[in-house]
Image 1 (cartoon, helix red, strand yellow):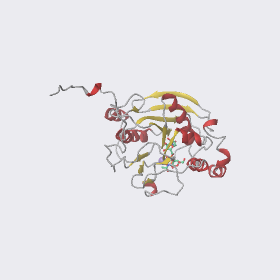
Image 2 (image 1 turned 135 degrees about the vertical axis):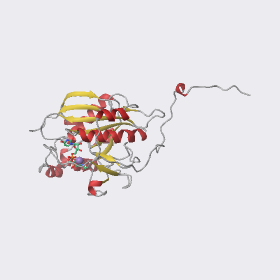
Image 3 (image 1 turned 90 degrees about the horizontal axis):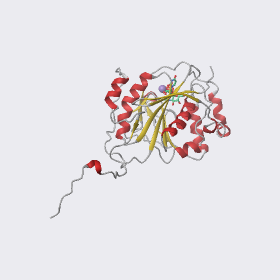
Image 4 (image 1 turned 60 degrees about the vertical axis):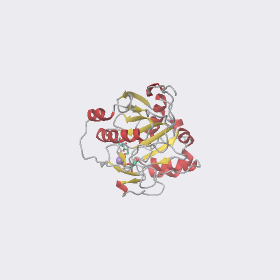
Length: 287
Ligand code: UD2
Ligand code: MN
């Protein structure tokens, strides 16, 4: 006969590592964008388990990676609301230790997606000791939560089957939409190019960098990697740049001097919302 010792769960401080795969995933998801949302509604519905700035840690296990989610942004608040509404619950079920960073390009100059992602990498690291970086367009929502927003042995391309491309890769070397790199993978390619102004080409440059540094692309299968893109027109000041395709022929030569080691910008403002950290930056964009 033994005395039973009752210990409240809260005093048991030794959490085990989170198990793979996460136990609460749902698989295929229903995703629609045809409803209006206010940011207040999204905050009310999903901010409870979050820490200020859109940060989360699983309560009952230790996540294996610390993931910064970086979103290049300007003037897409409608899309951002839907992204936050759908992604936070998914990322929580994936049991990630994560933070969401919206990198907002200041001013009306030409947009630069890749440079904003470089800024996101640097600024996120000032906030927390992240080891993995997920880069996502603001208008892309995964249709299956088994597509884990973490990093892999090789740089990962997550958005492999988008509705806008009939749920297939548009071409074999496509690397656009959503991707993830460990810190050391990102540094190995000197980050992303800063010189692709306007629409197009920057994703192919990143693909080239990865291959030139002897890595390959990791991808989920085409069921797990399904995505929906919120329908939109090309934004103002993000016209296709006819110079960009040409630049792709020089990646190997330019990548060591155009990247995280040549990044210049100034932070205008950092706002920590309940759902995300919003960083407005001047990236010296041409008019
Ligand atoms: C494709 C790729 C994208 C990128 C781009 C070329 C897909 C789904 N995505 O996107 O990864 O390679 O081509 O540059 O095929 N943005 C703003 N405000 C703007 C302009 C852009 O927030 O004024 C951000 C936003 O996160 C957006 C992303 O940049 O999702 C890419 O721009 P896009 O959605 O206009 O381009 P798209 O869909 O052709
Ligand atoms: Mn888009």
